[in-house]
Length: 325
Ligand code: XMP
Image (cartoon, rainbow, N blue to C red; front, side, top):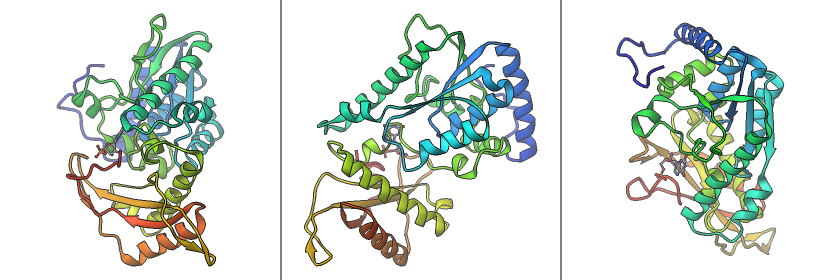
């Protein structure tokens, strides 16, 4: 398949168009792969999930999915990958809990770019280790989508193949590489993936690692994950998940004085970020109803160990970036 989208290719907007695309790709993948095996790094994000579902339909157990949990996933994400792909779609899924490896390496590292490098580098290392244990893999599947090709060299920055050992020669399988994001979602729904998986907001490769600000500790990471889960639940209940482009919690490495159960309670602040954008180059702030902000504040401060304040970040991009680090 060429790397240029033909002008004649219709935008996939309906289940019928998605079905036609899926049938065409199933045939193409079958012809490309034959009876060989294909390896896929399955992060649980939209693109890799849709590629996994498509390839499971095409070649079933010839696809080997590897899900690396770097310990920086949001609450319930790795569990959902296992539930959907192993339990529901009966995929050949290797699940690796590498939490300790990542968190040990990140201990005392406060500098954002250094944290990113460690997370990216270790991800490739863990994936490579698993890949080299497997026999008879001939192909590597990737969730490359058309904007990746337009914007870069076509290689996914965060799950890239750049780190694979040189003696591992894989041919690439990239069934959605000519699709735009909205089309990938339509195809994912037609493949039967859960709505919260195909409609999910962008989530950075380094995950909660860049939201647990400064040097990551397990207790603060845990507080962040729990607070983020409450924010997501309340936004979903209020229907804001359909209108807000990206929303999350960041927890800085500082404590303030508070009071809980009539006692002094020092805790971290949870900072809410909720932004709208079309291209992530600039972003505006969503006007969240005050009643909802009060409710989220009450829940987070009552339910999350270690958090004693909730703040709302009103800064557009520019001047603030979307992430805090
Ligand atoms: P910023 O913070 O630069 O974010 O305004 C713009 C968009 O990019 C996402 N982001 C990342 N995505 N790896 C990723 O895969 C990263 O290291 C990374 N940093 C930021 C961010 O979530 C937002 O959607």
